[in-house]
Image (cartoon, rainbow, N blue to C red; front, top):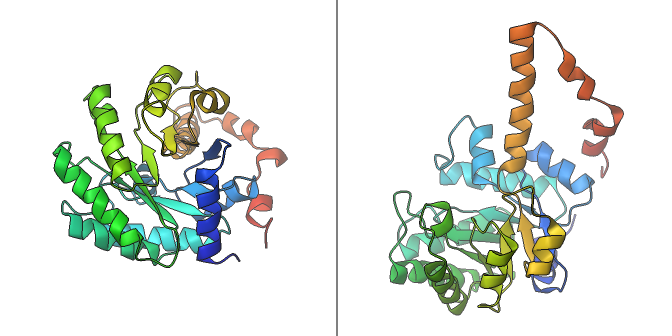
Length: 270
């Protein structure tokens, strides 16, 4: 099993390399090990996927639950993981710093801090102070912990590209290792951001019309999927359950095959 330092160095190399990489979002140990067995280089936890696995809604997961989740995934896999830390589980910079220190103890090697409070977008200066606190805490660690500065404007109905870029540039100046603005929906929007920053940009895939190749051409360094794969898994569950309940049939079983059997993947690296 690689050490946390080795995992952190791997993640740093991915972020600072010249190749765009895809980083899927596991919601439990099984999905994390499946992604690893299929050859993905790194993982990024999903707040929504974890919430659904716990029978909760996105935003309802406690810090203790997040810590336990990150520890379980880190111990079960050999590839680096960054954590979706939402707003850092605190409105205050000191609280964000403490969350960075605690999450690093679980074995993950990075984490995103967003500027959504749960009720609105944080004031610009306060949002920057929160990233500065996260970076300062990360720099005290014994590993190159990646701080991901995340602007929520586009996801929260504030379709202001100028303010989004302004915030990302400020998070960059505050020391963020990666920048992230979920809600960029076109290659042109990705290019507009990339042209204004020097720090690696993470993009979440939000449309089947975009591909990793197209996002790479636009300048994205890292492509995540958020909770979409968890939603797809639950969609298959709901579809099959409704078929059984309403029709009394089991056609959903036709989709099962040796090619998508989970057991070989769970045991592949034992």
